[in-house]
Image 1 (cartoon, rainbow, N blue to C red):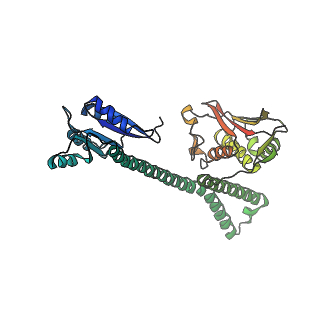
Image 2: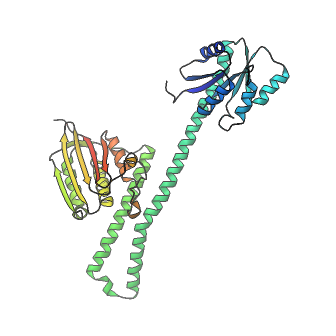
Image 3: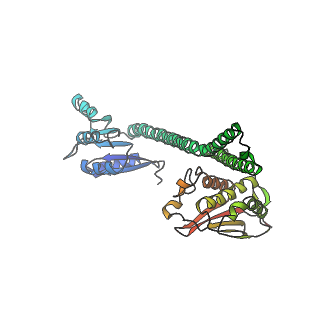
Length: 374
């Protein structure tokens, strides 16, 4: 039975036949029944499981129902569990008061009326389900607030870096201009200024695009528009655009089958490739890099392998989560959103992205797009 949509009810009675009788009345698909024949046995169950309701027989040897209830009220884990006492016939006002003082919310009287038992228990079942719904909403809200705080903290830090660089460069240029130092404005130095400004603006644009995409993913509004496209052409264009970064690697081995026809959103597919290449440039600079693209059956398979530091096995499952960055991330800029966005894009394409890594030997990302059937 699935525990996700079920509730637990504890019934306590020293007589097995009473337990069986009550269990038969309460047994439903969305209820797990736990039985105990003594207060001690009940306490052991209460320490292990969470319960929506406890139904306690009043008259038991060694520890009666009232005493068990008082012990439950003394424990943080069990003090809020609703308690229904079961007693033989009507009880006097003093015992009724004792029951409520011990934590009872209601009484059941023997012989049990099935309709009354079901009716009373139904109320607590519904209350528990509502409590679970509310708790789930609270958890989701807490996660949303944490995501927002992480988002703002990382974004503000990362956005400051290129902005600070541009500001310092602008201040230096303004100071030289005010001094009429024309040596600072030779064509070579101006080209260097403009090139650096362009890089910082590209970095800002990339950061903002990642933030916007993460927001769309969070809101469920990230969409893809797949068309028939040659993935080999897309790969060649991306590699040409990143030729300077590729040239900085120790060696590059590129094997691209052409054509490799796929159904993809070219803009988003390119984004995946760029994010994976950027990951290699950041975390495995100057290492050997292998890029392989070919069609295998009904899929187009892209593999990007570096020889960087690798990723510990215990961290592999979390690399596609938001704001996850490598162990040497203190020396690397970025929001930790690239792989998260790549994973969401591949999911939207009904494709796949996987990772293989060996510590000290490097990392390989494997991307699979649906290929066009001949």
